[in-house]
Amino acid sequence: MKITFDQFYLKTKTLDKILIFLIFFFPLFMSLSIFLADLSASIVSLFVLFLFLSKKERLKFYQIKKSLYIFLIFYAFILISLIFSISIEQSLLPSIFYIRYFLFVLGIFYFLEKYEFMETIIFYSILFTFLIVAADSFIQFIFLKNIFNYPVIDEGMNIITSFFNDEKKLGSYIVRLLPFSLSLLIYLKKDKLTYPVLITSGIIVFLAAERTALFLFILLLLFFFLINKHKIKFALFGLLILMALLTLSKDHRYKYLTYTLQQFGVIEAKWNSDYGGNVKFYSQEHENLAYSALQIFKKNILTGTGIKTFYLACNDLKSKMTTETVKKDKMSFFNRNNKMKCSTHPHSYYLQILSDSGIFLFIIVFSFFLHILIKNIKIMFKKDIKINEMSYYFLNVGIIINLFPLIPSGNFYNNWLSLIMFYPLGFWLYINQKIKDV
Image: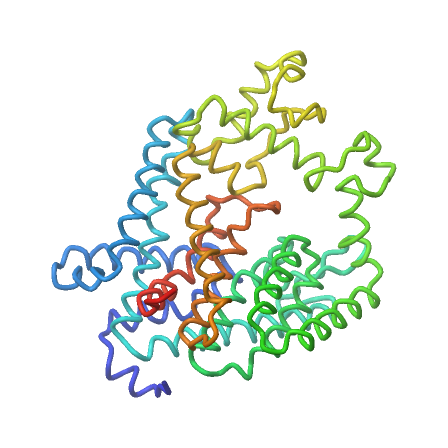
């Protein structure tokens, strides 16, 4: 629906106005400052806590009680892992305050239920942010500096990062918000913007030179292709654009194709001569981190070692393991010469959940992933897909690419990643209750 400033001003209370403004600017804050983004989400979360003190307001969440129970179980296992953490100091704050992400989701859901125009506000919020970030990205690509004077990262090629400066997050940021953007475009019947948004996003993700982000973008395109009425045209168009981009930039082509195949061990290179002819799970380093996570999990199956304790647990276990122990270990990926490798996290959400929080939390997250995947498969096979279902489909695609298990990932409990993954779930809860036959 259309919304005027007068409507917004007259129909909302002062506190609601402030919170809606925070939600409106949240996507932009995510690109500018994690402090501002986290602060905004935390303020909205506190508001939701006060809502639960009021029986009248609390009843508005009754229709999503199933989702509430699932998250409370999820949160309970996080608290249990805290009790058994090898470092309470390290795990305490991340574990206790993890609930703020879901409270933020409930805040978005609450305003969507309370104000009909909230759908439009969130749409323009994301569109406004997308235009700013896209414009800044192209400025940085053309002039080698963005509007804040942040230079491109020179790694043999010019890598654009926009407002993220020296952090290579731009591609991840765009691809994780893209399904939400497509969902809103469809829901509000503004789908003429779909292809311009897709093409612009694809170019930015490509120039950001983040291989995981590009893979997730291709995965998103695959889901788009599966429900597209013009499959052949869409496939040819996408293939031509990708080939053109790879042809125009030999440096990007090397990073995306040649270097990746070298990491897998498919193509030989001087730096990966120790791969011994084995094809790797992404790279030797990622295999070693996976091996380390599984070793930690073996000794802490039920509760894990606590949130954000991977580095401590890994180094402690590494100091106790001898070469002979590793050779005899049945989990060393069938004699692939894996070694204990320690980092802040194992670069895999599911392995991190296993090592940090145990088997039960893993089951919840992976079951949710499978549940969403099955929902989308059902929608694919429907003859007549309604607008709400199509919007829901793309929200589900966002969840799928966020939780996709077969690629390297960041820290599951990282503030920035948690916020960007949870952000669309408020709208997902809102649409989910409207979908009855999927």
